[in-house]
Length: 267
Image 1 (cartoon, rainbow, N blue to C red):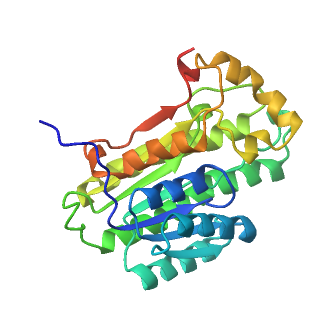
Image 2: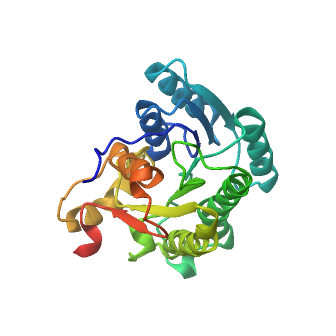
């Protein structure tokens, strides 16, 4: 008989894109509510990152939180941050790569190289850099006694648009598809090391990125109407999926792209 679905997080969580009120912030708070007491968070915006740190500490003042602002496109910053996390906590058990941007609605012939590089720099390069840094640390450590079969777990935020496409988003769709296949390849490479690598593919989620302007909201209306559930998802609903994939309850899930989209991709 399966044991109860209580998720335990005794180790160290590392979350990127953690500022503000989006998916990264929801994941950070979900880890805090689930009993994780050591956490490293990062975002490019210091004010929004501080807001998340304060929200985490409001849940549990005893949580050790390392918060540092920076650009995950910068390999030197990512290396320095990884060193800081290692010096502070000695390990990374759950790495969640949430940083991402949406970009303009435009066809490839209308997309500048600068716009292409910006999208892929954050979404793909940044996710690869932070995932690589977390994997390097996980390889150095032994599994926790509470999770004897898991040396570490990596979860990246991809998108439903990494699976299916929509008009005017070739550069974005490509960047998210890259995360999905990177996840699969890393899952193959690190299975023998006891590290699980998965990703979550959200649909339209109610975050500042999707509701920040009337233009973006209008662009996303068709996707909301196509999905059978006919609504935006919440950051908390994505965070629930992320924590499951990080947990021991997902011990036989590897290289998977878990779609959390209200049914968009089946319709």
